[in-house]
Image (tube, rainbow, N blue to C red; front, top):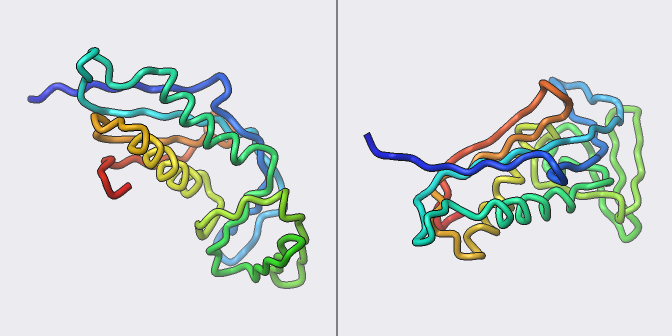
Length: 165
């Protein structure tokens, strides 16, 4: 059996507070927010210095992604249930008889169908994987991201990291 090494980070400053309203079936949750916590794990080969990756480098990359989502409304831009329109001032969202208007500066429009923890984790996976590769961390073989909405309730995404990330 081959050996496997990994590094994981969580806790301090790997969090963000954000509002969202996910869809469930053909219903829309009320607008609400969470204090999300993020965990990341990388599996990989040891570098010549005998590291999979420096903890501080991984924390910095994950923290930067968290900061992009902090204190904003997370919009599921690819929703098939919401009528979404963007104009110069912001975003308008309609669901049946409900109407919302958000200033552009308060919204992060994610290219996902729903703002579930699982899909937020998958989006974050892409951002973190791209940053790892851009910084030359070619020894990383697999990346996992877990997004916790509240204690004991999390969704995650993991897969191999390759040049196509």
